[in-house]
Image 1 (cartoon, rainbow, N blue to C red):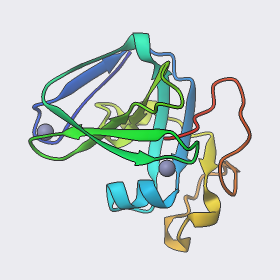
Image 2: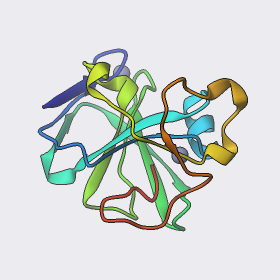
Image 3: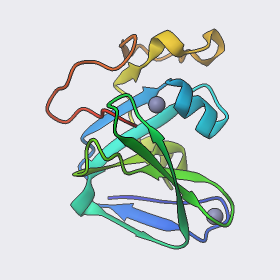
Image 4: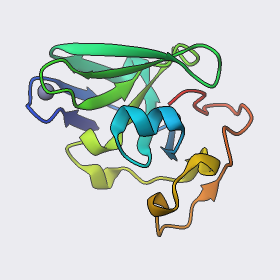
Length: 142
Ligand SMILES: [Zn+2]
Ligand SMILES: [Zn+2]
């Protein structure tokens, strides 16, 4: 079970999981949207995900060519989760919003080619220069 919320507490969410993938995305869009060097992302099945509270969406064209939709609290602006149109069967939780961030265990790095040197993690992860080819449950837009 994964639960999380925004900074002000107006938005809560939960998912029974399972985690389909756990990555750090360093694409420029994630950097700009978060104001950081990359975003920790965990995919969960959409049918497992429940959210309550005032959520706003921002839509940009993702690497798939379809809209990448980032959902954030309309009160405090915390970035919470993605609902990519390229993968409508999943929700991508931004792991910093989890109540138990330790439950996130990243396996891979996406868009390492766009990562600033100061954002490299000490953990040994499988690195992809950009987006790897489509696999079963891989994200195409975080
Ligand atoms: Zn909030
Ligand atoms: Zn990204």
